[in-house]
Length: 101
Image (cartoon, rainbow, N blue to C red):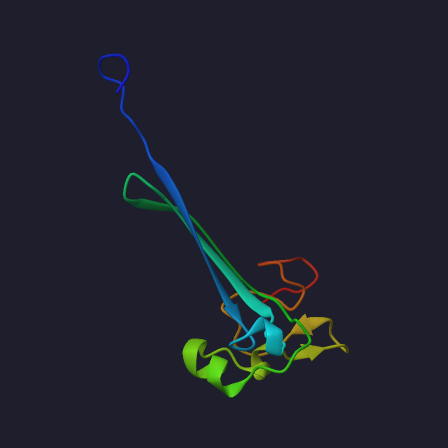
Protein backbone atom coordinates (compact mmCIF):
# COMPACT_ATOMS: atom_id res chain seq x y z
CA UNK A 1 0.00 0.00 0.00
CA UNK A 2 1.31 3.42 -0.92
CA UNK A 3 -0.14 6.63 0.54
CA UNK A 4 -2.67 6.56 3.38
CA UNK A 5 -6.11 5.53 2.11
CA UNK A 6 -4.77 4.12 -1.17
CA UNK A 7 -6.26 0.74 -2.03
CA UNK A 8 -4.09 -1.89 -3.67
CA UNK A 9 -5.89 -3.65 -6.53
CA UNK A 10 -4.90 -6.92 -8.09
CA UNK A 11 -6.05 -8.17 -11.45
CA UNK A 12 -5.77 -11.74 -12.69
CA UNK A 13 -6.61 -13.01 -16.16
CA UNK A 14 -7.12 -16.74 -16.61
CA UNK A 15 -7.14 -18.21 -20.12
CA UNK A 16 -8.53 -21.62 -21.07
CA UNK A 17 -8.38 -23.38 -24.42
CA UNK A 18 -10.16 -26.45 -25.74
CA UNK A 19 -8.86 -28.54 -28.63
CA UNK A 20 -10.22 -30.84 -31.32
CA UNK A 21 -7.98 -33.68 -30.17
CA UNK A 22 -5.90 -34.80 -27.25
CA UNK A 23 -2.55 -34.34 -29.03
CA UNK A 24 -1.18 -31.65 -31.37
CA UNK A 25 1.08 -34.29 -32.92
CA UNK A 26 -2.06 -36.19 -33.94
CA UNK A 27 -3.81 -33.16 -35.44
CA UNK A 28 -5.52 -31.63 -32.40
CA UNK A 29 -6.12 -27.90 -32.92
CA UNK A 30 -7.49 -25.10 -30.75
CA UNK A 31 -11.27 -24.80 -31.19
CA UNK A 32 -12.25 -22.61 -28.24
CA UNK A 33 -10.60 -19.83 -26.25
CA UNK A 34 -12.04 -18.43 -23.06
CA UNK A 35 -10.71 -15.82 -20.66
CA UNK A 36 -11.89 -14.44 -17.35
CA UNK A 37 -10.55 -11.24 -15.81
CA UNK A 38 -10.91 -10.90 -12.03
CA UNK A 39 -10.07 -7.76 -10.06
CA UNK A 40 -10.11 -7.89 -6.27
CA UNK A 41 -12.31 -11.00 -6.30
CA UNK A 42 -14.89 -9.68 -8.76
CA UNK A 43 -15.25 -10.76 -12.41
CA UNK A 44 -14.72 -7.62 -14.51
CA UNK A 45 -14.56 -9.10 -18.02
CA UNK A 46 -15.27 -12.35 -19.83
CA UNK A 47 -14.39 -13.62 -23.31
CA UNK A 48 -15.37 -16.87 -25.03
CA UNK A 49 -15.17 -17.80 -28.69
CA UNK A 50 -15.31 -20.90 -30.84
CA UNK A 51 -12.73 -21.28 -33.60
CA UNK A 52 -13.51 -23.44 -36.63
CA UNK A 53 -10.11 -25.04 -37.19
CA UNK A 54 -11.42 -27.13 -40.07
CA UNK A 55 -10.45 -30.31 -38.24
CA UNK A 56 -12.58 -33.18 -37.04
CA UNK A 57 -13.32 -33.17 -33.30
CA UNK A 58 -12.09 -36.45 -31.85
CA UNK A 59 -14.49 -38.30 -29.56
CA UNK A 60 -12.05 -38.27 -26.63
CA UNK A 61 -11.79 -34.48 -26.80
CA UNK A 62 -15.59 -34.17 -27.12
CA UNK A 63 -15.96 -36.22 -23.93
CA UNK A 64 -13.73 -33.69 -22.13
CA UNK A 65 -15.32 -30.40 -23.29
CA UNK A 66 -18.65 -31.26 -24.95
CA UNK A 67 -17.95 -29.16 -28.06
CA UNK A 68 -19.36 -30.90 -31.13
CA UNK A 69 -18.87 -30.34 -34.86
CA UNK A 70 -22.55 -29.35 -35.06
CA UNK A 71 -21.70 -26.22 -33.07
CA UNK A 72 -19.80 -24.96 -36.14
CA UNK A 73 -22.65 -25.23 -38.66
CA UNK A 74 -22.44 -22.31 -41.06
CA UNK A 75 -25.11 -21.19 -43.51
CA UNK A 76 -23.56 -19.69 -46.64
CA UNK A 77 -27.06 -18.71 -47.81
CA UNK A 78 -27.64 -16.36 -44.88
CA UNK A 79 -24.06 -15.70 -43.76
CA UNK A 80 -25.09 -16.56 -40.21
CA UNK A 81 -24.11 -19.19 -37.72
CA UNK A 82 -26.71 -21.78 -36.85
CA UNK A 83 -27.07 -23.90 -33.75
CA UNK A 84 -26.21 -23.50 -30.09
CA UNK A 85 -23.07 -21.36 -29.87
CA UNK A 86 -22.90 -19.67 -26.49
CA UNK A 87 -23.09 -16.34 -28.36
CA UNK A 88 -20.08 -16.82 -30.62
CA UNK A 89 -19.64 -17.22 -34.36
CA UNK A 90 -17.62 -19.26 -36.83
CA UNK A 91 -15.57 -16.21 -37.73
CA UNK A 92 -14.21 -16.34 -34.18
CA UNK A 93 -15.59 -13.02 -32.98
CA UNK A 94 -18.23 -12.84 -30.26
CA UNK A 95 -21.13 -10.64 -31.35
CA UNK A 96 -19.65 -9.90 -34.79
CA UNK A 97 -21.83 -7.78 -37.10
CA UNK A 98 -21.37 -10.27 -39.96
CA UNK A 99 -22.47 -13.23 -37.83
CA UNK A 100 -25.20 -12.12 -35.45
CA UNK A 101 -26.22 -14.81 -33.01
